[in-house]
Image (cartoon, rainbow, N blue to C red; front, side):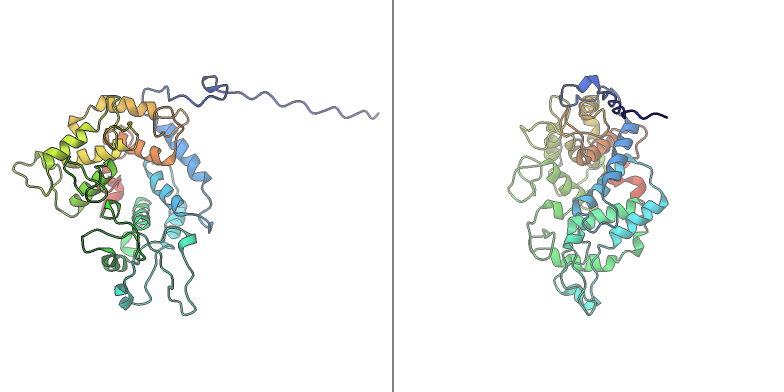
Length: 347
């Protein structure tokens, strides 16, 4: 067989681009007129697979929150994966050396990442404890969602030591070494009917949710309180209802504060408050649905505003907002806990 010069490789086939988003332009909003559940599930599964392995020691508190936000997609998750998630989350709980340490001023909850988790001392006692209330909420919500039996969690240490975080004014520090105190860690009403993050601050959709959900969980508010004849409340219900309803903007979406643009996440924060109060039927559900559809990406997931690329945070709240709208194919929500009714069973 004669030898010949090796022929150059064939050029790769031309890339096929979606013509609707060519020339480097940002992707357009979804052209779908319905909630694209399967595409959202695919997007969330893709994002889940992109997370570092469960055993990666560099995994951060953000990833713990991503696990929590991943839940509304209702993506398929095997028992082995659920067990791995539960085992990983449980590895972040700080445990006291003995019961006498529960009153030493520290909080024995869950730490947010390996970078904030120090090794035990030579005697096996925890030297540096950076347990955080937000991480503890995410951890417990994630465990409940994957079906873990919370009776196996050291709840006594969490509840007893949590008292060390409460301040004289009733607020909570998120961590015993000191930090800001606001309504996120109680989860202050102002004269316009909503709640600010701290006393005297501007009312905010997220702060209002934290306040109302906390009051409901502590038993200071009845469920569907607006429909209860002669119901008394610790807050000005008519003023709060008016403030919430005014947050629905002309485009159908909800804003977090007056004179701010509508944002996907506030369809949950404000919408859930109205659900708790029993006033959700007063919103324009059709307009809200149309707004959320404009925030739905053709790649799956939701962006913050219409036409923006999707992210996990707004995808979570976009899905929960559709759950509030009773979208077929989505699990119903426990409004005050921010997790599905199925996951909330037994709490």
